Amino acid sequence: MNCNNYKNIQKLSYNDPIFLIGMMGSGKTTIGKHLAKNLNRKFLDLDHLIELKSGLNIPTIFEIVGEVGFREQESCVLNECLNCKNTIIATGGGIILSEKNRISLMKSGIVVYFKTNINELFKRTYKDNNRPLLSTKDPYITIEKMLKLREPLYLKTADLVIDTSINSIENIINSLLILLYEHKRIK
Image 1: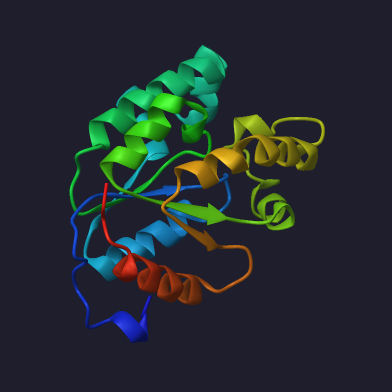
Image 2: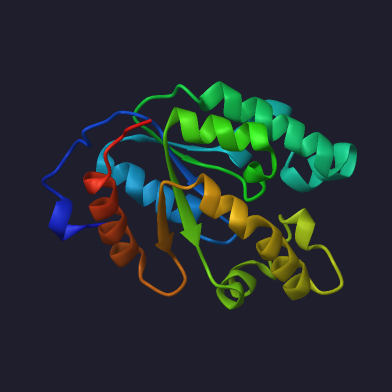
């Protein structure tokens, strides 16, 4: 990934973690890896950390402990990452369902909401077997319901919002870098 406009800038004025929130399929992991490389930060993916810690993949965790058990594990792993400086952290789409998680995110770093329209979310996720919440009769309706519930929470939690629906990864990164460099950490 070559972000020409910002390739010579190496550091933000803050070292707080940057948390990426948004629906599954919004690009948190894909874009987050590129962003971390551009900012010379470590990239962490909470879902991946949960899998490493438990030794199980996400669908198996859901089968064994259900969504409630998974959310408990997710909160635990988030708490372990709150003080990780100079990181980009991709969260799970449902991390914001817990008020405690929302407060922790807002207090601990910069929170960026990856806003994506429902059609793009569906296109990116409907064939993915690693998304247990979409194992329903009508995944589009499921995404629609989740987005309706979650979007106000994403917006309430986020310091910055970026649309990841249709732009190229490079354009999204360039736009995001502008927002991050202009953002002043005041919390």
